Length: 252
Image 1: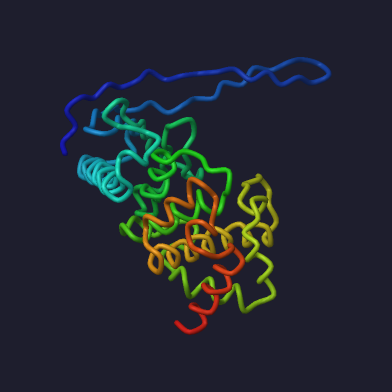
Image 2: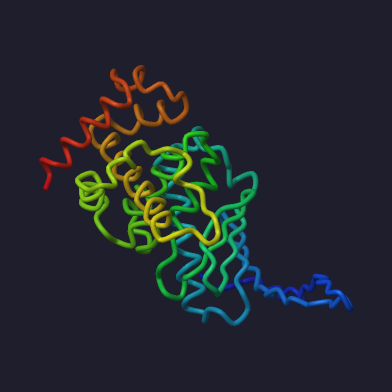
């Protein structure tokens, strides 16, 4: 898809005042300018000079196809975001910031390195937030693999099930709780905390993969909305986890 509309935004500046005992100094921070490209389901804002034309075509085509694939996978009635009414905004930038979704906008990094979780973040944009984090992030992790998105956080192409079994068989098995607190990102996290966060993302993806493959997508999506696992699967969540763990042990 060749860019049809290119609007180069002017540089944006904002001032941060830092005060010392003698004086205050204004610091000017330069924000990137963007090329804007109007897609079918999304408007793309690509940092000027970051990608060449072929790379721009590639990421736009992949994101657009990803949106279509996810709409077909979930069914448009299940989605909280309808791109036919309002297109997604996708910002593609250089730098090392983690890709994320915020207020309906997707921010993607590492596109040039082919380590961009564009399916993962699009799932978040289309489904919105869920109060149970392992559901919200697990489905995104699973589908990032299912639709062959770039190998990226959290598993970077590593098999979800194999990694999960290693965690389960280690001193880190307490992470099977999938507690919401492990999913939060805090600047300056310790190495242990970084590992815990990565591990619960992967465990969640493997668990959801198991539930969908064994019980079907429709029953999982029912539980995703209702949080009533007994009604959807006929057993409590702890029993489902135990069943999943036995499956992993038999698999490897």
